[in-house]
Image 1 (cartoon, rainbow, N blue to C red):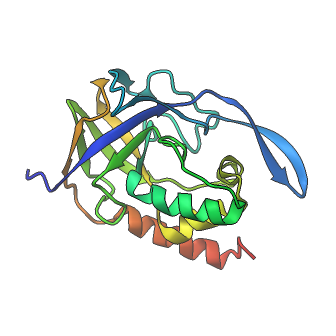
Image 2 (image 1 turned 180 degrees about the horizontal axis):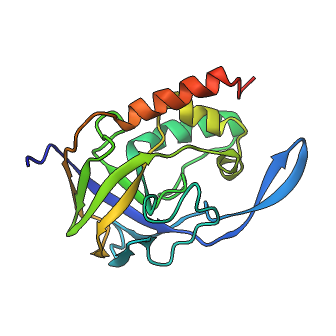
Length: 209
C-alpha cells in the first residue's frame, strides 16, 4: 500500500494524575486529571521512550472513558495549531502565552499531518512502531481549566483543531525526531468530519448558550 503523507514526531509527553481546579456554578472545585503533560523526549533532548499497548510508559489517565485504554492509548496533536492557541490565549488572558509541547494534553506533538488529511482507520508508522487512528479528541470542562480560559472547549470544537487518538499496534521504543508515514485506510471519515459532527451536535444542544 502506498504511503500517502509524511510528518515528524516533535515531542513525547506524559502526565501524572493530580488535582485540577475547575469552576463549577461559580464555585471552585477539584477533579482528578492527568491533562498536565511534560515533554520527556523532544528535538533538543531526543530520549528513547517505551511505548506499550496502553500508551507512553509513565503516562497516567484519570478517566479512561475519555483518554486511555487500548483504543485511546495515545493522544496526538498537530504542532501547527500552537500558533492559534498562543494568539487566542494571549488575547483572552491578557498575558503573553507561549505554550510548550504537551500543553494541549497530548502525548505526541507532531507536524505534517492535520485533521483534514487524517482519517479514522489510517495507519501511522512512526519510527519502527505502528499505530491506528481511532477517533477525534472531544474536549471537556477539564480543558477549560487546564488552559485557564472558559472558552477553550468551544474554541477547540469551532476551530476543528482537536487532534486524535491512536491505538498502538506495534510496541517498542520511540524518540522525538522520528519520521511519520501515513498509510491510508478506507478513508471514509476524516477527523475533520468527526469534528464537524461534534460541532453540529453541540449547537443543536445549545451547549454554549
